[in-house]
Length: 534
Image (cartoon, rainbow, N blue to C red; front, top):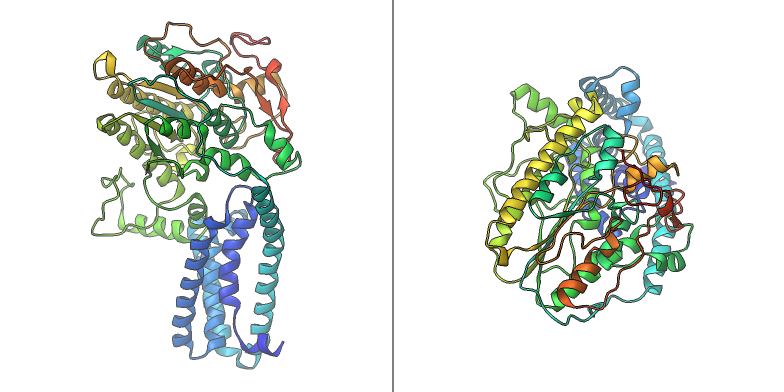
């Protein structure tokens, strides 16, 4: 105890806790590698704050007391904002509140000379307990995850099947997140979507009853890109698990990319901010706007930084951020502040659309996988591409703001299709425009039940396929995503990959991710046994 009363470790412990807390709250979504850089930055910055306060207050314990107040105010601003809002404090009021906390800490540091030892002891104990509590959650979880990874099969670069012929066509797999089918959008928002008809007029086979195989992005894309169901994970992971890592490992080293690279294709990966698809270890080129991970963005958005940026932006009369010009990552003279999640959501989508305009000119056969988080929330685009502030999104009405982002998404899809099909027919690529899942039912919350209408909205997806030399109606009315590349590899490459049953699966809750329940016969989608027109 004597050491804890003399050595002020609490600024560093609170800084570490701010990162560990977010990590522990999202264990099933993140990996240890995501935490290393943010934790290091937090400790370095807290060290700088401690050094500055030590100089200002002429004493390690006095300076550390003020430094802890600064660290807590800065790091936990966003976490405590909802509670302070309940006290009728707006953002400026909350900044003032935290300023008062820091000033009060400075006053105590100056006046409480005889009590600094006990204050240091108390803060050290509190911060140490908080860190230990988070580690008590993190360490067993990570140990279990490491054991599951070690017990699983090693990654392989052997393709799932052999090609007997090679098409001289590029392949574009464009995933638009939460883009529902016509049925899904009509039921959820009352939106009459005109894109499928437009795509059909350009030679796409649009499947009205297209459906996802799983109701979450990582599981859905892992199934699609590995061309199989995920039943094996139920056996290896167990039904009572919230760990998404096994599904995401399948997604990171998927069979589609392995097959195409083995057959002479160059794999371009257009990553999203979403950690599961941000990069790929098997891609030849990963094109991603910005370098921050999703975890880093969450830490940024829950800190005081966004509030300070808004405050100083208002005082300076700053205009909303525009589309960045240095989309290829060139260094500019100034380094702008880290973008918020909303800004990244917008900037990355714009970057991806620009790359899709440019990639057709890249030489050689290529496979392009782009996971575009549109019309997925947050709503950051109006119908003409204008910036939608968060206040406008929250004010609604929901169908109107979602419809605006959908309208803009459709316009960019049309531009992309026009660019990809601008050459002579013999050079036209194979194009898959498909969603991973349908819309959420409760805003940006995945509230689920087993009612047919609920399942139809969540599993009904956009499915449009440009298949050169294939006759209309090549795909069944109930085509599901797991068979997309089985069809392409079978018909264009001569691979022995027969179609799987078009089945869809959900799970009881996010603590039982691998307790798969077959809900295919409950889906009220066109072509289904329970199908019904809207």
